[in-house]
Amino acid sequence: MTRHKSLMLIIELVLPVRTILVLAGPYIYKVAIDHFIGATPDPSSQWLADIIKSIGTALGGGTSVGSWGFLLSAGLLYISVGVALWAAMSFQNYYMNKLGLSIIADIRTDFFEHIEKLSPSFFEYGNTGKLVSRVTNDADALRNLVSSGIIQVIADIITTVAVLVTMFLIDIQLALIALAIIPILALVSRTMQGWVRNKWRTARQNISFMTGKIQDLMYGAKITKAMAQEERSLNEFDSVNEANRRAQISAEIAANSFEAAIGFLTALISALIWYVGGFQVVGATRTLGDLVAFTQYSTNLLDPVTNISTFYGEIQSALAGAERIFNVLDIEPEIKDAPDAAEFPEGRGELELKNVTFSYLKDQTVLKNVSFRTNPGERLAIFGPTGSGKSSTINLIGRFYDPKQGQITIDGTDLKKIKLRSIRNYVSIVLQEPYLFSGTLRYNLKFGGPNVTDEEMMRICKLVGIHDVIAKLEKGYDEDVREQGSNLSYGQRQLVCLARALVADPKILILDEATSSVDAYTESLIQNALKEEMRNRTILVVTHRVSTVRDVDRIIVLDAGVIQDVGSHDELLKKNDLYKKLCEMQLVSATED
Image (cartoon, rainbow, N blue to C red; front, top):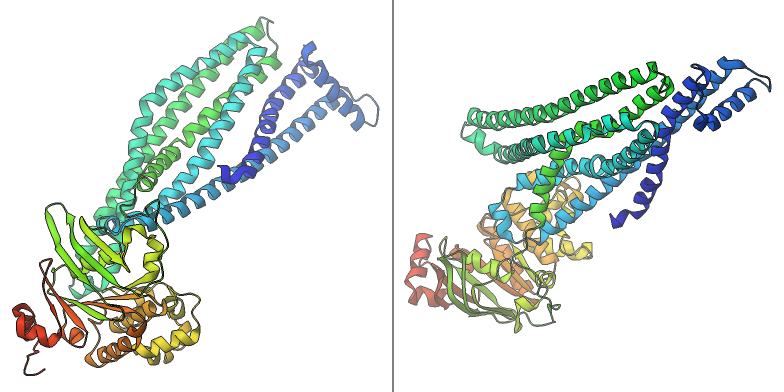
């Protein structure tokens, strides 16, 4: 709220004006009936009657116009108040909605900023479709809580207090009758609000499930067709869609039931006021103008309650959405900067793991007492079968996770003492799954180095062998990347991702199976490019392919989270049975070498 003080100030100024105009309308009715129709003038309202008469005289050119002219003046004054009330309501709604949209925009920004700080484990075990639903549907529902909920409740409280005071000034007995509805409404609200809120919470959860299912089915559409499972996918979607439909209908029924209960109580209190007030008018203890004005005031008193019941379903939906958003915002990142974290000092890019032990789940150790050290400008490979712990090692070096035991340093500095942003500017990782963002190829290539010149970008693209492919595209480097990079082959996307990492100019470059989908010729181009680039950086290659590691300086053989051996390709063929076996399985023998 503090970010939007100007909007709050405007709303604070409009609310009392609106309240005054709400009170003015029925009072004009009272004066018109008592002074110009029923001939039962009230001395306390003579001042307004005089104003109406002066307006009528002015409209009549200074001559007396009689009761019809005064009634016309009262009608014109009533219309003017109505127009002013409409304007005030319009201003109020406009600025309340503007405030609500502004606050939700801030919440979405904070939500996305917080999401980016969360550890990879959150995304591995969370559903991105549900996150999309939280930042879109739930946030939009939360806007109703801000604009139609909190601020509207404040406006209704102001109006209710003002109307109640006016009603007590007119007639204490009738005011007490009208006031009798408040404890009844409180009881109804207390009884029904938990039920309605639970219904809307379930409805929101079902929307989230449906969003996630749609995303899952769309991403897997090709596999679905390839395996002829279209009917099954449709049935699964129909099941989720039907559950969402039932949940939404159930929530609407609950909200409408609450609104119907409020409507019945409103009609009941109006009937009681007319019954008691009618006897007062007949007994000449109360004027007809008082009764008509009081009836309108009672409606104005009940209007805020009716508004709350009308918006109750939305408010409950918004509360359920807010709960889901703030549940995510309350999650503390597992990996975050230490209070004394510093920027990365300039160094030579020496990476060292010291007795590192790591596990994702308790009692399921992935890495066991791993230790190794890289030399500046060295190409080091981590080689091993699937599940050996290669990618886990990369995750620790990028500080996506922290080791359970041991220490990881770069140039002698513990990663935990360096700011995360600084680490990831220093260390660039090309992941096994090539991902390209929506936008142009130029945008993707410069994602980690937006200030890099086009000449440098193209030089790197030529090194990795992707420049000629891009040059043949209609718009070249300004070609838009289609969804999931479908206008490039899998191998071409890997090359773009490799070029993107090099454009960022890291001190340490890590390739996590980054050449697994390219042909032998392209891989040889990449290897030559890495030789060219390794003069200024340390390169760590993670792979299960022998062809990728044959020319590196050293190879670490990793198996079941334990370093089995270290050496060159030739050395390992002679002394390490696991390495030799993996080579033979990939049809690479010592003789062929």
